[in-house]
Image (cartoon, rainbow, N blue to C red; front, side, top):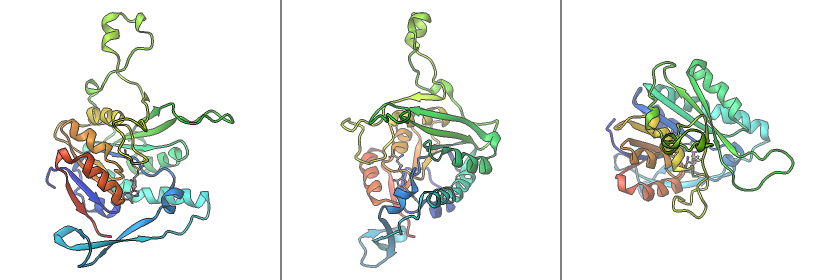
Length: 284
Ligand SMILES: C[S@@+](CC[C@H](N)C(=O)[O-])C[C@H]1O[C@@H](n2cnc3c(N)ncnc32)[C@H](O)[C@@H]1O
């Protein structure tokens, strides 16, 4: 596969199945957390049509149609389906990773334990390296239990012992008690632990793209800098607004971004236009 920046519209499973093995150093994914929501959202189907308004592989024309999904029968069914939906995609991700490559799997407290078991089965428990807690503090606060203000990011490596981990390339964070460590150390800051405090994307800030589930660039930049090298390829197959692509390109990596939602593709094209991405459409 050519090393170029790519944005691909379509269901990620078929696209992943066509990608070569051992070709990507870093995969970050942030799948929809709640399959109930995913199923209730209108989905689009791409259909071959000579009069269609979209051009795909080989110059063929397509049109899109909205298809309705049946409402879910309940939480348990939805949940079972979620791990079943992810499993074949994670198996492809494992195949596509280079021998020193990493997968970052972004999820929340409701699903993380079930997903970890599935990830352990595919990668092997020894290849699980960290559970990163992204902690933030924003929005309503429950008074019935502790407000949940974190996401979970599971880090797996293709090989349990040999993998890219450039800790020196990480940004540094302030000491909590700088007066105790001396001026020089305090000015330099320290490397992060597995708990990452970072604000959410501000609803009024410059970073905001308008995509509802956009993740902060700072989180993705740390992952890209430490877990890949210049010239590597970064893949996000639930790409949304393309945060992983921006982090990759800002640090001289290539990106492959896949999403099935045409609105996400439009946002990514606009956001990443300076990096000359090649946009493709993958029919169902
Ligand atoms: C939580 S969002 C990702 C947000 C992204 N990390 C960002 O910073 O903007 C999940 C995305 O997965 C996409 N998605 C869901 N199922 C998919 C599938 N089967 N193939 C490709 N994309 C899919 C959705 O359209 C949505 O944009």
